[in-house]
Length: 466
Ligand code: PNW
Image 1: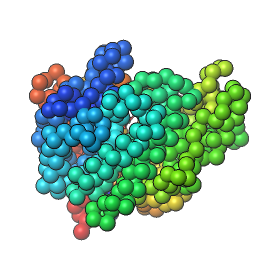
Image 2: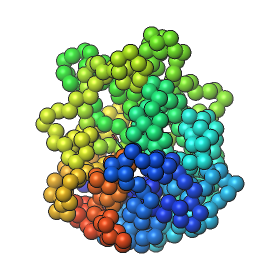
Image 3: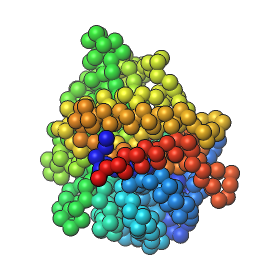
């Protein structure tokens, strides 16, 4: 059913699992600051200890082996490696930690997929303007080169930046993620721009300095819902859907895969609103003097969770904001079950549609589904029958995308290996294939039924094939 070399993975992110926030010379990140400020996260929780994976990596490795994963997606904590964000000071203990993780994975025949940046900017760089500052892209490039140099002999799959959309919008427009800025209609576009520049610089560095020797592949992980017009016969809804797709998937995929610039509908919508409010355009332009953005992804890394119906309208009154720029509202179809967190409507078939859309609109790239998952809230259920069904259904949709739609899907990564610190929701939302007991000092890991189901799917698809 699946090709023999299909990647079967699960993912995590440094801040969500590691803990050890001050251990062995690690610098602070914006999530350390944000959670410690108070009033930001469910129950005033934080990632100071999280799953304690910094101490308990061996336990994580056991989980990875039990599931039979071929790939494991982890992120590096920039501030653990470079406490001040720059390469003048390297924290050797951090290097040792990730060396061990990577070596252990390889010894178990598991390939690492490594994300350089998963929401956790070193606080030292936030103090210099963070992603709003153009210089952060250059510092990211130095950090990326440091990581390629240090780990690249052993890592063949790299993600530069995870979900620039979420960093830009939740971190700088809504203020619900670190660094908690609420600067609607302006900062997010600038931040997204600098993240794209950072990604492109790092890709070019890899391409010119490391690719020949290391033979890996580099991309950025783009999150997107599948979107459909609320009323399929309504021209306004169709146009609104196209606009919203341009402002989400297109914002980052269009420059990298299609034109080297933002989608035209996005720019014209922002410009039109800017004019009304007497602003000059808020969406920056790419400079011809910098490394090109177009062509800077060796594969398409997609994080898919849910789907939405779209209608025209939305906005925030007179004020400038991204909502007004988009002029598109999201609606949930009542037939879609909501699981756990309120934003996650369960729509496995949306993934197949999105994969087909990516094939048709972004030049038939190799695609890895780098995140997909299902959350649990409230009472703990280790026999999570619904989530087990969800994985079965979703993976069946990926199979159809491969076979019937001939999308070049290369791998699937469940989110997440472990229950972990789910950002503003703290530990109240559980995405793991393994439950983690946060009341236990040893953070005991217990497999969920969905974990067993995923292991079964993997083993069924890996054996019986030669
Ligand atoms: C992704 N939202 O982020 C992240 O890459 C993961 O770290 C995270 O745990 C996972 O999805 C599940 O949420 C998101 O509020 C964070 O819409 C928030 C949202 C979406 C994705």
